[in-house]
Structure formats: structure tokens, C-alpha cells
Length: 502
Image (cartoon, rainbow, N blue to C red; front, side, top):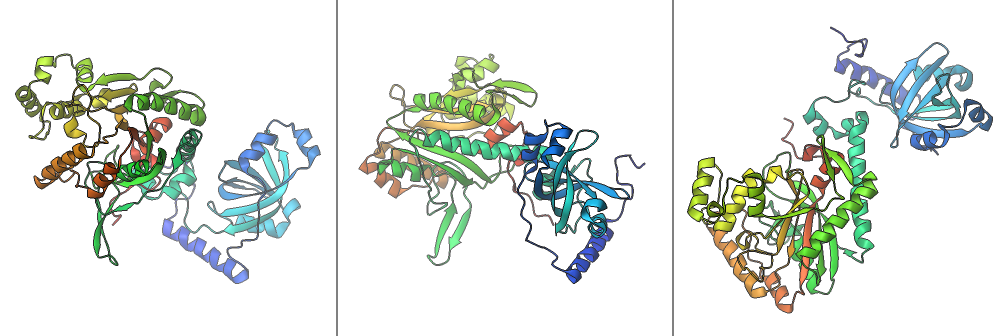
């Protein structure tokens, strides 16, 4: 049964496209089909902000002339007059088109315009009988003919994959989507401001590496024809950024694209954006305090508050973040896991096997504890929580703790059940780093596709001397998910990776 909010006539899309192509052909025959001479002087949001509170009489007296342009998203044709709503980058504004003000020919031409067409209009501001700010149009011009019809105007795109695949349509029809990417842009700008005002230098490092490094991940491989050599898309900028610290650039940050040849999920996209930053003469404890300060600053600047709702649950970044070890976190949510169990390698393996949890059979107790944590506890860390004291065996670039060399001065920050940040006191002992690279090489030879390669030039850089340094990476996509209340990483990436449409 046809609903009241469905189009009155359900036409075949191909027929609609054919009719619009015929209109375009007529435009080509009568003049310039895609003119580029109209220049607007106002945006919809600016007009509403400046004039919505003015009275009808005051607006009439001011005789304010404006020029606007945007996509027509609503249209109501009457006898001598018509209404249309156009949408620009800032919002929507209503047009009033009458033959008394535009002339009969212009009004007749407007009647042939279709939803989705991009228009330019000049006229005088006024308010309708219902008090809606509108423009009494004296000149209207078709700037771009839309050949394809927009999705049903009341609901926009309803197919989730189509929203990702045809993001342009999602942006046209969905105000919430536009808000998400406005939030994303504001977060990145606020990040830059935060670091620049603290005397950090923004830098750029290579996106194609001769040796993949800086993280444990499977890289994408490409080939440079002129050099006849294999190259790898960046999995992390870490080793290059620390080379800069060796060179005396003691406070650096980079907002970068990384590429990891891994699975796709609500938390993972093969191409993603991170912030990485390094500061000499600091440690991971400083980084945790710094991170709390930064996230609060971002929230205030972007959202206007440190309190937010994520998937119907409240998060207040103003509260102190918890700091727990891996075993403390496990036991907080699973008190049945005793100290005896968590520190017995055989018992841990039996537990992991019984629960069907995958693990590296060569891992020590620390690595096995982490496997248990990942599967049983990570998703329960809703309140902002730093997990600290990561095992050295799974932290090949982090500095060993001076009191316990089996763990590192490292943390990961979890909010809403997912990792947001990873930071540590950097390993600056070249001999220890070389030994750990050798361990990674052995793991790779044993079949671990995500293990690191041996980077001889990075070791050479360390041999010139890396000062005590703290470094951190923050997943911008996941941070946007949090701030914009989006359940999937695909919701916050303009063009997420998808299977081929065919």
C-alpha cells in the first residue's frame, strides 16, 4: 500500500533519468547548460542566525537583498507562485518564486526544474504568514541539472552499504551524516591547535616504506618501477618520527594515514587515520596526564562539554581516568580468575583452550594474559581506562620498566570498550632494540605475518642517541566514533573500504 509520505507517482528510475536527459538536451540547445557566472553572497545558516529573530515588519522595512545557491530538496508548485527549499553547505533556506517578481518565463522555467537541481537565486528577505524566513526571488537560474533522482525525500538512504558506497547521496539527504563529518573536521583542527600552542612541530613522513615498521601488522605491498624495488604502505610513522627526535626535533606530531592489510570490522578499516606525537625528556606517566588534558580540551572545543552519550551510556571525560594493569582489569570484571591462575602458564593455556581463545603458543605468561584480556575484558572497559605495564614480549618498541624488565612502561587507553590510544616511554637502547628486532625476525620466520622486520637504519639512528622520549598514537577514527556517537568505523570514514560493487 502506498504511504502518504511516498511519492504520488512511482516512476521507473530509468524513465526519470531519460526525461531529465531530455531536459538537459533542451538546455544545451538553448544556451549554456552548466553556467558558471552566478556568485552567491550568503549562506543559509548565516541568514537564519542574523534574521530569524527579526519581526516580519522590520524585515520588510530593511529590504535586505541576498544571493544564495544550493541544491533544491523541496518544491511546491502552485498557480501564480511556488515555493522551493535549497540546501547549501550550512543548511536550508526557503525560496518564494512568483511570476510577479521573476516574470512569467522564469517562473515557467522553474516549474520544469527537478529535485536535486542546483539553483542560484537573488531576492529580498521576508517572512511568510507562518513566520518562516524566506527569499522573495527576483532572479533564479539553473546552475547544474541533476540527471539522477534523489532518494525518497522523507527518509533518504536506508540501505547501509549504499550509504557507504554512495557517500555523496548520504551527505545530500542525511543531516546527521553531515554533522558527523563536521565533528571529524573540528576534532582534527582542535588537535592541531592543541599541539601547536604547546610548541610541537607538525611534520610529514613517508607513506611508502622500504621496510614496514612501527607496529606489528601485515602490510600492503607495492612495487616502484623506476627503482625496481618492493615498497610497503605505511603501517605506522613511528620509526621515522623518532629519527626526527634523534635529529633534535624534540616535540613533533603527525596526523597521518596508515594502511594495514587486516580484516574489516566495526572497529577496523584497512586505511585509517592516526595522530602520533613524540616529546623528548618525558615518560609514559606524563603522557597519560597529557592525554587526559587533550581529550578534555577536544571535547570542550568540539562539543562544548566534557560529557557525552555513547550508545545511550554517559561518559564524562572530566572524571579522572582509571589506571589498571592487565591482571587488575581482568580481575575487576572476572574475580574468579585468581592470581594463581593468571601467573601459571600451563593453567592459562588450559583456560584459553577451554574458552576457544586463540593465542601464540610461544608466548610467556604476559602474552597469554594479554590474550585472555583481549577476549574477556577489553569490551567491558566503557569508562576511560588506561591499561598499563604491558609485557615486553608484545611491546617491541617500548622501554623496559626499571624495576621489572619483563614489562614495559606502556599503556593503552580504552573508552567505550575499544582501544583509543597506545603510548609508552620509548626504547632508546640500540642494543636492546636490535635484540628485540631479532626476536621479531624469528617470529616472522616462524610464520607470524604481523611481526616486524629488522630496520638497520633505525638502529643506526639510535646509536647516535635518542634522548629519553615519550610517544603516543591516537586513533582519530575511533575518537570520532566516540564524539559523534557512531557504532561503526565506517560511519566516520567518508569512503570506507568495501567489496567491489560487481
